[in-house]
Length: 518
Image (tube, rainbow, N blue to C red; front, side, top):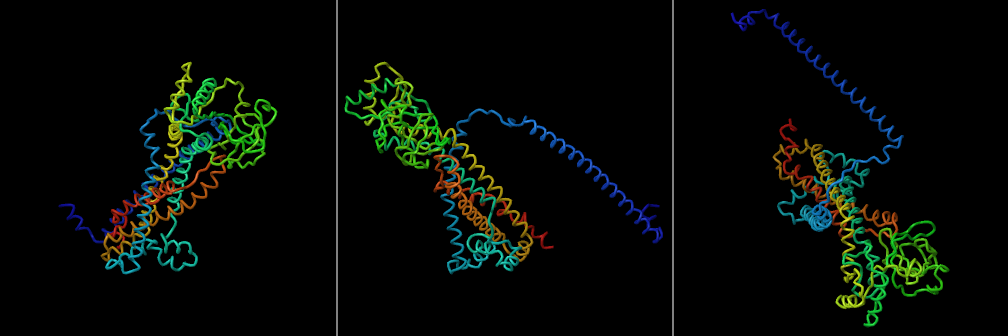
Protein backbone atom coordinates (compact mmCIF):
# COMPACT_ATOMS: atom_id res chain seq x y z
CA UNK A 1 0.00 0.00 0.00
CA UNK A 2 1.38 3.41 -0.90
CA UNK A 3 2.16 6.10 1.68
CA UNK A 4 -0.45 8.32 0.06
CA UNK A 5 -3.18 5.75 0.59
CA UNK A 6 -1.96 5.17 4.15
CA UNK A 7 -2.24 8.87 4.94
CA UNK A 8 -5.74 8.90 3.57
CA UNK A 9 -6.70 5.99 5.79
CA UNK A 10 -5.58 7.74 8.98
CA UNK A 11 -8.34 9.05 11.20
CA UNK A 12 -9.17 12.70 10.70
CA UNK A 13 -8.37 13.48 14.35
CA UNK A 14 -4.74 12.39 13.83
CA UNK A 15 -3.98 14.70 10.92
CA UNK A 16 -4.15 17.99 12.92
CA UNK A 17 -1.81 16.48 15.49
CA UNK A 18 0.71 15.63 12.77
CA UNK A 19 0.48 19.15 11.35
CA UNK A 20 1.05 20.62 14.81
CA UNK A 21 4.15 18.48 15.37
CA UNK A 22 5.53 19.50 11.98
CA UNK A 23 4.84 23.18 12.71
CA UNK A 24 6.53 22.92 16.12
CA UNK A 25 9.55 21.31 14.48
CA UNK A 26 9.71 24.07 11.90
CA UNK A 27 9.39 26.76 14.61
CA UNK A 28 12.18 25.08 16.57
CA UNK A 29 14.45 25.12 13.51
CA UNK A 30 13.74 28.78 12.89
CA UNK A 31 14.38 29.63 16.54
CA UNK A 32 17.69 27.77 16.48
CA UNK A 33 18.70 29.55 13.26
CA UNK A 34 17.77 32.93 14.78
CA UNK A 35 19.75 32.12 17.92
CA UNK A 36 22.81 31.12 15.85
CA UNK A 37 22.52 34.33 13.82
CA UNK A 38 22.24 36.38 17.00
CA UNK A 39 25.28 34.66 18.50
CA UNK A 40 27.26 35.19 15.29
CA UNK A 41 26.21 38.83 15.25
CA UNK A 42 27.24 39.18 18.88
CA UNK A 43 30.67 37.75 18.11
CA UNK A 44 31.06 40.21 15.24
CA UNK A 45 30.00 43.13 17.45
CA UNK A 46 32.43 42.10 20.18
CA UNK A 47 35.31 41.81 17.71
CA UNK A 48 34.45 45.15 16.10
CA UNK A 49 34.14 46.83 19.52
CA UNK A 50 37.53 45.50 20.58
CA UNK A 51 39.14 46.81 17.39
CA UNK A 52 37.58 50.27 17.86
CA UNK A 53 38.80 50.47 21.46
CA UNK A 54 42.29 49.41 20.37
CA UNK A 55 42.26 52.01 17.56
CA UNK A 56 41.14 54.71 20.02
CA UNK A 57 43.98 53.84 22.40
CA UNK A 58 46.51 53.80 19.56
CA UNK A 59 45.41 57.17 18.14
CA UNK A 60 45.40 58.75 21.60
CA UNK A 61 48.91 57.45 22.29
CA UNK A 62 50.15 58.75 18.92
CA UNK A 63 48.67 62.21 19.49
CA UNK A 64 49.98 62.49 23.06
CA UNK A 65 53.48 61.31 22.13
CA UNK A 66 53.66 63.75 19.24
CA UNK A 67 54.72 61.03 16.82
CA UNK A 68 51.84 61.86 14.51
CA UNK A 69 52.73 65.56 14.12
CA UNK A 70 54.57 64.86 10.87
CA UNK A 71 52.58 61.80 9.91
CA UNK A 72 50.75 62.02 6.64
CA UNK A 73 49.93 59.81 3.70
CA UNK A 74 51.47 60.89 0.43
CA UNK A 75 53.06 59.42 -2.62
CA UNK A 76 55.42 60.96 -5.14
CA UNK A 77 54.07 60.64 -8.67
CA UNK A 78 55.59 61.47 -12.06
CA UNK A 79 54.53 64.80 -13.54
CA UNK A 80 52.07 64.56 -16.45
CA UNK A 81 51.97 67.74 -18.52
CA UNK A 82 48.85 66.78 -20.47
CA UNK A 83 46.92 66.15 -17.24
CA UNK A 84 48.03 69.51 -15.85
CA UNK A 85 46.92 71.28 -19.02
CA UNK A 86 43.54 69.54 -18.86
CA UNK A 87 42.94 70.36 -15.19
CA UNK A 88 44.10 73.96 -15.64
CA UNK A 89 41.47 74.44 -18.32
CA UNK A 90 38.61 72.93 -16.32
CA UNK A 91 37.25 76.19 -14.95
CA UNK A 92 37.49 77.84 -18.35
CA UNK A 93 35.42 75.05 -19.91
CA UNK A 94 32.92 75.12 -17.05
CA UNK A 95 32.58 78.89 -17.43
CA UNK A 96 31.60 78.43 -21.09
CA UNK A 97 29.13 75.68 -20.19
CA UNK A 98 27.65 77.79 -17.41
CA UNK A 99 27.34 80.79 -19.70
CA UNK A 100 25.17 78.64 -21.95
CA UNK A 101 23.11 76.55 -19.52
CA UNK A 102 22.13 79.39 -17.16
CA UNK A 103 20.29 81.56 -19.71
CA UNK A 104 18.85 78.43 -21.37
CA UNK A 105 17.58 77.14 -18.02
CA UNK A 106 16.03 80.50 -17.15
CA UNK A 107 14.43 80.67 -20.59
CA UNK A 108 12.93 77.18 -20.28
CA UNK A 109 11.56 77.98 -16.83
CA UNK A 110 10.13 81.25 -18.11
CA UNK A 111 8.49 79.60 -21.14
CA UNK A 112 6.88 76.93 -18.95
CA UNK A 113 5.50 79.56 -16.58
CA UNK A 114 4.21 81.66 -19.46
CA UNK A 115 2.62 78.65 -21.10
CA UNK A 116 1.04 77.55 -17.83
CA UNK A 117 -0.42 80.96 -17.04
CA UNK A 118 -1.45 82.28 -20.44
CA UNK A 119 -2.83 81.14 -23.76
CA UNK A 120 0.70 80.66 -25.05
CA UNK A 121 0.51 77.08 -23.83
CA UNK A 122 -2.31 76.25 -26.23
CA UNK A 123 -3.56 72.71 -25.86
CA UNK A 124 -0.55 71.96 -23.64
CA UNK A 125 -1.52 74.62 -21.12
CA UNK A 126 -3.00 72.11 -18.65
CA UNK A 127 0.03 69.84 -18.81
CA UNK A 128 2.42 72.77 -18.44
CA UNK A 129 0.47 74.08 -15.45
CA UNK A 130 0.52 70.63 -13.86
CA UNK A 131 4.25 70.17 -14.45
CA UNK A 132 4.93 73.66 -13.09
CA UNK A 133 2.91 72.98 -9.94
CA UNK A 134 4.11 69.45 -9.23
CA UNK A 135 7.77 70.28 -9.84
CA UNK A 136 7.70 72.97 -7.15
CA UNK A 137 6.84 70.65 -4.26
CA UNK A 138 6.71 67.03 -3.23
CA UNK A 139 3.41 65.39 -4.10
CA UNK A 140 3.12 63.72 -0.71
CA UNK A 141 3.56 67.09 1.06
CA UNK A 142 1.16 69.25 -0.97
CA UNK A 143 -1.63 69.30 1.63
CA UNK A 144 0.76 69.62 4.52
CA UNK A 145 2.50 72.56 2.88
CA UNK A 146 -0.76 74.38 2.20
CA UNK A 147 -1.87 73.94 5.82
CA UNK A 148 1.32 75.47 7.13
CA UNK A 149 1.80 78.17 4.50
CA UNK A 150 2.14 80.88 7.14
CA UNK A 151 4.94 78.98 8.87
CA UNK A 152 6.76 78.09 5.65
CA UNK A 153 6.84 81.53 4.10
CA UNK A 154 10.31 81.04 2.62
CA UNK A 155 9.29 77.76 1.01
CA UNK A 156 6.14 79.31 -0.38
CA UNK A 157 8.14 82.16 -1.94
CA UNK A 158 10.56 79.68 -3.46
CA UNK A 159 7.73 77.56 -4.80
CA UNK A 160 6.18 80.53 -6.57
CA UNK A 161 9.50 81.80 -7.92
CA UNK A 162 11.85 78.89 -8.52
CA UNK A 163 11.62 75.64 -6.53
CA UNK A 164 10.00 74.28 -3.42
CA UNK A 165 13.13 74.01 -1.31
CA UNK A 166 16.77 74.99 -1.10
CA UNK A 167 19.17 72.29 -2.41
CA UNK A 168 21.76 72.88 0.30
CA UNK A 169 24.48 70.47 -0.82
CA UNK A 170 24.22 71.55 -4.46
CA UNK A 171 24.36 75.20 -3.34
CA UNK A 172 27.51 74.38 -1.39
CA UNK A 173 28.97 72.87 -4.57
CA UNK A 174 28.19 76.06 -6.48
CA UNK A 175 29.77 78.14 -3.73
CA UNK A 176 32.92 76.00 -3.68
CA UNK A 177 33.21 76.11 -7.47
CA UNK A 178 32.83 79.90 -7.69
CA UNK A 179 35.03 80.42 -4.61
CA UNK A 180 37.89 78.21 -5.84
CA UNK A 181 37.68 79.66 -9.34
CA UNK A 182 38.00 83.19 -7.96
CA UNK A 183 41.10 82.11 -6.04
CA UNK A 184 42.52 80.47 -9.16
CA UNK A 185 41.92 83.61 -11.20
CA UNK A 186 43.61 85.82 -8.61
CA UNK A 187 46.52 83.42 -8.14
CA UNK A 188 47.21 83.22 -11.88
CA UNK A 189 46.46 86.83 -12.82
CA UNK A 190 47.04 88.76 -9.58
CA UNK A 191 50.85 88.63 -9.72
CA UNK A 192 50.60 90.42 -13.04
CA UNK A 193 49.03 93.48 -11.45
CA UNK A 194 52.05 95.19 -9.86
CA UNK A 195 54.35 94.17 -12.67
CA UNK A 196 51.99 95.38 -15.38
CA UNK A 197 51.32 98.59 -13.50
CA UNK A 198 55.04 99.28 -13.18
CA UNK A 199 55.71 98.43 -16.81
CA UNK A 200 52.90 100.63 -18.11
CA UNK A 201 52.66 103.65 -15.84
CA UNK A 202 56.22 104.01 -14.56
CA UNK A 203 58.43 102.64 -17.32
CA UNK A 204 57.34 103.68 -20.83
CA UNK A 205 58.53 101.44 -23.65
CA UNK A 206 57.79 97.96 -24.96
CA UNK A 207 61.21 96.33 -24.74
CA UNK A 208 63.15 94.72 -21.88
CA UNK A 209 66.82 93.73 -21.80
CA UNK A 210 67.26 91.04 -19.15
CA UNK A 211 69.08 87.79 -18.43
CA UNK A 212 67.14 85.39 -20.69
CA UNK A 213 63.92 85.22 -22.66
CA UNK A 214 62.08 83.30 -19.91
CA UNK A 215 62.48 86.15 -17.43
CA UNK A 216 59.68 86.94 -14.99
CA UNK A 217 59.35 88.36 -11.45
CA UNK A 218 59.60 84.97 -9.72
CA UNK A 219 62.80 83.98 -11.54
CA UNK A 220 66.17 85.47 -10.67
CA UNK A 221 66.88 86.72 -14.18
CA UNK A 222 69.53 89.40 -13.88
CA UNK A 223 72.24 91.24 -15.77
CA UNK A 224 75.32 92.77 -14.20
CA UNK A 225 75.32 96.33 -12.97
CA UNK A 226 78.15 97.06 -15.42
CA UNK A 227 76.14 95.83 -18.42
CA UNK A 228 73.11 97.76 -17.21
CA UNK A 229 75.16 100.95 -17.09
CA UNK A 230 76.58 100.39 -20.59
CA UNK A 231 73.07 99.73 -21.96
CA UNK A 232 71.84 103.00 -20.42
CA UNK A 233 74.84 104.95 -21.81
CA UNK A 234 74.47 103.42 -25.28
CA UNK A 235 70.73 104.13 -25.36
CA UNK A 236 71.26 107.73 -24.22
CA UNK A 237 73.81 108.26 -26.98
CA UNK A 238 71.21 107.00 -29.46
CA UNK A 239 68.52 109.31 -28.01
CA UNK A 240 66.54 106.48 -26.41
CA UNK A 241 65.19 106.65 -22.85
CA UNK A 242 65.72 103.74 -20.44
CA UNK A 243 64.53 102.75 -16.98
CA UNK A 244 66.15 100.35 -14.55
CA UNK A 245 63.80 97.67 -13.22
CA UNK A 246 64.97 95.82 -10.12
CA UNK A 247 63.39 93.35 -7.74
CA UNK A 248 63.94 93.06 -4.02
CA UNK A 249 62.70 89.67 -2.86
CA UNK A 250 62.85 90.70 0.75
CA UNK A 251 60.21 91.59 3.32
CA UNK A 252 58.23 94.71 4.02
CA UNK A 253 57.26 95.20 7.65
CA UNK A 254 55.14 97.76 9.43
CA UNK A 255 54.63 97.71 13.18
CA UNK A 256 56.02 94.20 13.35
CA UNK A 257 53.62 92.83 10.71
CA UNK A 258 55.02 91.44 7.46
CA UNK A 259 52.96 92.76 4.56
CA UNK A 260 54.74 91.52 1.49
CA UNK A 261 57.63 89.51 0.10
CA UNK A 262 58.18 91.35 -3.18
CA UNK A 263 59.19 94.92 -3.82
CA UNK A 264 59.53 96.52 -7.22
CA UNK A 265 62.31 99.00 -7.70
CA UNK A 266 62.21 101.53 -10.52
CA UNK A 267 62.30 105.23 -11.18
CA UNK A 268 59.48 106.65 -9.09
CA UNK A 269 58.63 110.25 -9.97
CA UNK A 270 58.99 112.63 -7.00
CA UNK A 271 55.52 113.05 -5.53
CA UNK A 272 56.17 114.43 -2.06
CA UNK A 273 58.23 117.03 -0.27
CA UNK A 274 60.51 114.33 1.15
CA UNK A 275 63.93 115.58 0.06
CA UNK A 276 66.42 112.75 -0.38
CA UNK A 277 69.96 112.53 -1.70
CA UNK A 278 71.07 108.92 -1.90
CA UNK A 279 74.75 109.90 -1.93
CA UNK A 280 74.32 111.91 1.28
CA UNK A 281 71.28 110.55 3.13
CA UNK A 282 71.61 106.75 2.81
CA UNK A 283 71.45 105.30 6.29
CA UNK A 284 70.55 108.67 7.80
CA UNK A 285 67.01 109.16 6.49
CA UNK A 286 64.18 106.70 5.68
CA UNK A 287 63.99 105.65 2.06
CA UNK A 288 60.94 107.23 0.32
CA UNK A 289 58.65 104.62 -1.24
CA UNK A 290 55.28 104.35 -2.95
CA UNK A 291 52.78 101.92 -1.41
CA UNK A 292 49.61 100.46 -2.89
CA UNK A 293 46.33 101.70 -1.42
CA UNK A 294 45.36 98.18 -0.27
CA UNK A 295 48.13 98.32 2.35
CA UNK A 296 46.00 100.74 4.36
CA UNK A 297 48.88 103.18 4.90
CA UNK A 298 49.11 106.91 4.48
CA UNK A 299 51.83 109.27 3.37
CA UNK A 300 54.36 109.70 6.16
CA UNK A 301 53.96 106.21 7.70
CA UNK A 302 57.26 104.56 8.58
CA UNK A 303 58.08 100.94 7.71
CA UNK A 304 61.03 98.68 6.97
CA UNK A 305 62.07 97.08 3.69
CA UNK A 306 64.35 94.10 4.31
CA UNK A 307 65.48 95.75 7.51
CA UNK A 308 66.07 99.20 5.97
CA UNK A 309 64.11 102.18 7.28
CA UNK A 310 61.59 103.55 4.79
CA UNK A 311 58.78 106.09 4.70
CA UNK A 312 55.64 106.22 2.57
CA UNK A 313 56.01 109.05 0.06
CA UNK A 314 53.24 108.12 -2.36
CA UNK A 315 50.03 106.06 -2.47
CA UNK A 316 49.75 104.15 -5.77
CA UNK A 317 46.93 102.08 -7.30
CA UNK A 318 46.80 98.61 -8.85
CA UNK A 319 50.17 97.56 -7.47
CA UNK A 320 48.87 94.90 -5.09
CA UNK A 321 48.87 91.13 -5.54
CA UNK A 322 48.88 88.00 -3.40
CA UNK A 323 51.03 88.71 -0.34
CA UNK A 324 52.28 91.89 -1.95
CA UNK A 325 51.35 95.49 -1.49
CA UNK A 326 53.22 96.59 -4.56
CA UNK A 327 55.82 98.78 -2.88
CA UNK A 328 57.63 100.76 -5.55
CA UNK A 329 61.08 102.02 -4.67
CA UNK A 330 62.73 104.99 -6.31
CA UNK A 331 66.37 105.12 -7.43
CA UNK A 332 67.45 106.27 -3.99
CA UNK A 333 66.02 103.11 -2.46
CA UNK A 334 67.92 100.97 -4.94
CA UNK A 335 71.18 102.70 -4.25
CA UNK A 336 70.75 102.70 -0.49
CA UNK A 337 69.73 99.07 -0.22
CA UNK A 338 72.50 97.68 -2.39
CA UNK A 339 75.54 96.41 -0.56
CA UNK A 340 77.70 97.08 -3.59
CA UNK A 341 77.52 99.32 -6.61
CA UNK A 342 78.40 96.21 -8.65
CA UNK A 343 75.14 94.49 -7.72
CA UNK A 344 73.02 93.18 -10.61
CA UNK A 345 69.75 94.57 -11.93
CA UNK A 346 66.69 92.63 -13.05
CA UNK A 347 66.10 94.35 -16.39
CA UNK A 348 66.51 97.58 -18.34
CA UNK A 349 63.31 98.88 -19.93
CA UNK A 350 64.01 100.47 -23.32
CA UNK A 351 61.55 103.02 -24.71
CA UNK A 352 61.94 101.74 -28.26
CA UNK A 353 60.84 98.86 -30.50
CA UNK A 354 62.31 95.37 -30.09
CA UNK A 355 64.79 95.71 -32.95
CA UNK A 356 66.20 98.94 -31.47
CA UNK A 357 66.67 97.20 -28.12
CA UNK A 358 68.51 94.39 -29.89
CA UNK A 359 70.81 96.91 -31.55
CA UNK A 360 71.50 98.65 -28.22
CA UNK A 361 72.35 95.33 -26.54
CA UNK A 362 74.61 94.26 -29.43
CA UNK A 363 76.59 97.50 -29.13
CA UNK A 364 76.70 97.62 -25.32
CA UNK A 365 77.46 93.96 -24.62
CA UNK A 366 81.16 94.15 -25.43
CA UNK A 367 82.06 91.33 -23.01
CA UNK A 368 79.62 88.79 -24.40
CA UNK A 369 77.57 88.48 -21.22
CA UNK A 370 74.40 86.37 -21.12
CA UNK A 371 71.44 88.65 -21.90
CA UNK A 372 68.25 88.68 -23.96
CA UNK A 373 65.85 91.20 -25.45
CA UNK A 374 62.12 90.51 -25.03
CA UNK A 375 58.89 92.47 -25.16
CA UNK A 376 56.86 93.45 -22.12
CA UNK A 377 54.04 91.21 -23.31
CA UNK A 378 56.41 88.23 -23.39
CA UNK A 379 57.59 89.07 -19.87
CA UNK A 380 54.01 89.25 -18.56
CA UNK A 381 53.07 86.02 -20.32
CA UNK A 382 56.07 84.28 -18.75
CA UNK A 383 54.79 85.34 -15.34
CA UNK A 384 51.26 84.15 -16.06
CA UNK A 385 52.51 80.79 -17.33
CA UNK A 386 54.48 80.32 -14.11
CA UNK A 387 51.46 80.80 -11.86
CA UNK A 388 49.11 78.84 -14.10
CA UNK A 389 51.50 75.89 -13.99
CA UNK A 390 52.29 76.05 -10.28
CA UNK A 391 49.02 77.09 -8.61
CA UNK A 392 46.10 77.05 -11.02
CA UNK A 393 45.69 73.23 -11.25
CA UNK A 394 44.97 73.02 -7.52
CA UNK A 395 42.00 75.39 -7.63
CA UNK A 396 40.77 73.81 -10.88
CA UNK A 397 40.70 70.41 -9.15
CA UNK A 398 38.49 71.94 -6.46
CA UNK A 399 36.07 73.19 -9.13
CA UNK A 400 36.01 69.72 -10.67
CA UNK A 401 35.34 68.09 -7.29
CA UNK A 402 32.59 70.62 -6.62
CA UNK A 403 30.90 69.52 -9.83
CA UNK A 404 31.12 65.86 -8.85
CA UNK A 405 29.70 66.64 -5.40
CA UNK A 406 26.80 68.46 -7.02
CA UNK A 407 26.06 65.54 -9.35
CA UNK A 408 26.09 62.99 -6.53
CA UNK A 409 24.04 65.23 -4.22
CA UNK A 410 21.37 65.96 -6.80
CA UNK A 411 21.18 62.33 -7.92
CA UNK A 412 20.54 61.30 -4.32
CA UNK A 413 18.10 64.18 -3.76
CA UNK A 414 16.05 63.42 -6.88
CA UNK A 415 15.84 59.73 -6.06
CA UNK A 416 14.83 60.38 -2.46
CA UNK A 417 12.13 62.79 -3.62
CA UNK A 418 10.69 60.22 -6.00
CA UNK A 419 10.86 57.49 -3.33
CA UNK A 420 8.92 59.68 -0.89
CA UNK A 421 6.32 60.45 -3.57
CA UNK A 422 6.24 57.02 -5.21
CA UNK A 423 2.76 56.10 -3.96
CA UNK A 424 1.33 59.36 -5.27
CA UNK A 425 3.10 58.85 -8.59
CA UNK A 426 1.94 55.22 -8.72
CA UNK A 427 -1.68 56.22 -8.17
CA UNK A 428 -1.48 58.82 -10.91
CA UNK A 429 0.27 56.36 -13.20
CA UNK A 430 -2.43 53.75 -12.54
CA UNK A 431 -5.00 56.30 -13.70
CA UNK A 432 -3.31 56.28 -17.13
CA UNK A 433 -0.95 59.22 -16.55
CA UNK A 434 1.94 58.81 -18.98
CA UNK A 435 5.58 58.44 -17.97
CA UNK A 436 6.17 61.52 -20.09
CA UNK A 437 4.42 63.66 -17.48
CA UNK A 438 6.60 62.14 -14.76
CA UNK A 439 9.72 62.78 -16.79
CA UNK A 440 8.65 66.34 -17.56
CA UNK A 441 7.89 67.06 -13.92
CA UNK A 442 11.15 65.63 -12.59
CA UNK A 443 13.18 67.29 -15.35
CA UNK A 444 11.60 70.64 -14.46
CA UNK A 445 12.28 69.94 -10.77
CA UNK A 446 15.95 69.29 -11.57
CA UNK A 447 16.11 72.50 -13.58
CA UNK A 448 14.55 74.52 -10.76
CA UNK A 449 16.85 72.96 -8.18
CA UNK A 450 19.85 73.81 -10.35
CA UNK A 451 18.73 77.43 -10.73
CA UNK A 452 18.09 77.69 -6.99
CA UNK A 453 21.49 76.13 -6.17
CA UNK A 454 23.20 78.56 -8.56
CA UNK A 455 21.41 81.53 -7.03
CA UNK A 456 22.06 80.67 -3.38
CA UNK A 457 25.60 79.37 -3.95
CA UNK A 458 26.56 82.52 -5.85
CA UNK A 459 24.82 84.68 -3.26
CA UNK A 460 27.13 83.22 -0.61
CA UNK A 461 30.25 83.22 -2.78
CA UNK A 462 30.15 86.90 -3.73
CA UNK A 463 30.49 88.44 -0.23
CA UNK A 464 32.67 85.60 1.08
CA UNK A 465 35.15 86.03 -1.73
CA UNK A 466 35.15 89.80 -2.03
CA UNK A 467 35.14 90.61 1.69
CA UNK A 468 36.24 87.73 3.89
CA UNK A 469 38.87 86.14 1.65
CA UNK A 470 40.63 89.38 0.77
CA UNK A 471 41.14 90.25 4.44
CA UNK A 472 43.17 87.10 5.06
CA UNK A 473 46.15 88.01 2.90
CA UNK A 474 47.60 91.39 2.09
CA UNK A 475 47.20 92.52 -1.50
CA UNK A 476 44.74 89.74 -2.38
CA UNK A 477 41.93 90.94 -4.65
CA UNK A 478 39.86 87.87 -5.47
CA UNK A 479 36.33 88.47 -6.70
CA UNK A 480 33.36 86.80 -8.35
CA UNK A 481 32.85 87.85 -11.95
CA UNK A 482 31.17 86.40 -15.02
CA UNK A 483 33.71 83.59 -15.24
CA UNK A 484 33.19 82.52 -11.63
CA UNK A 485 29.40 82.78 -11.95
CA UNK A 486 29.59 80.70 -15.13
CA UNK A 487 31.52 77.95 -13.34
CA UNK A 488 29.00 78.02 -10.49
CA UNK A 489 26.07 77.79 -12.92
CA UNK A 490 27.67 74.85 -14.73
CA UNK A 491 28.14 73.04 -11.42
CA UNK A 492 24.65 73.86 -10.09
CA UNK A 493 22.48 73.39 -13.15
CA UNK A 494 24.67 70.83 -14.90
CA UNK A 495 25.02 68.80 -11.71
CA UNK A 496 21.27 68.82 -11.12
CA UNK A 497 20.43 67.70 -14.64
CA UNK A 498 23.12 65.01 -14.79
CA UNK A 499 22.19 63.78 -11.33
CA UNK A 500 18.51 63.47 -12.31
CA UNK A 501 18.99 61.71 -15.65
CA UNK A 502 18.65 58.17 -14.31
CA UNK A 503 15.50 59.00 -12.35
CA UNK A 504 14.02 60.74 -15.39
CA UNK A 505 14.85 58.07 -17.99
CA UNK A 506 13.46 55.13 -16.00
CA UNK A 507 11.01 56.52 -13.43
CA UNK A 508 9.14 53.21 -13.12
CA UNK A 509 12.23 51.61 -11.58
CA UNK A 510 11.53 53.77 -8.53
CA UNK A 511 7.76 54.24 -8.73
CA UNK A 512 6.85 50.60 -9.49
CA UNK A 513 3.17 51.24 -10.17
CA UNK A 514 2.07 47.62 -9.79
CA UNK A 515 3.64 47.24 -6.36
CA UNK A 516 2.66 50.61 -4.91
CA UNK A 517 -1.00 50.49 -5.88
CA UNK A 518 -1.80 47.14 -4.19
